[in-house]
Length: 121
Image 1: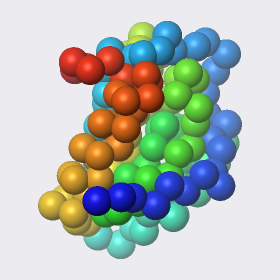
Image 2 (image 1 turned 180 degrees about the horizontal axis):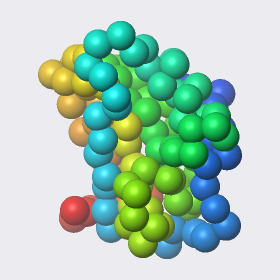
Image 3 (image 1 turned 90 degrees about the vertical axis):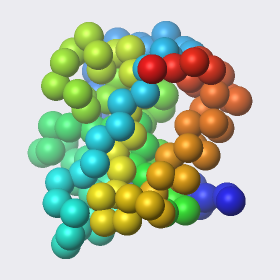
């Protein structure tokens, strides 16, 4: 299975610290409500300065939108120390069974590309 990679987004919600790559942690979040939100709206919100939150990737079935460079911390966990040690995925709760294979494929790609360590937590 291959996913479509969307790269038109760029979240300003990060800071000037850097994540030492490969990262040892992957944070998974399910976005807001399981109905009524579409992934492009979620990408736009996380790319808005007004949101004050971000993620590295937004993932839904067969799609990944990268919002941040992986060496920049996402404002995802509510914990500053955790943010600069982790890669953050924001995932689609509308179709969990369809989203999980894309999460696995993206995580495997990040391991292959030296973004995540092989035995990340």
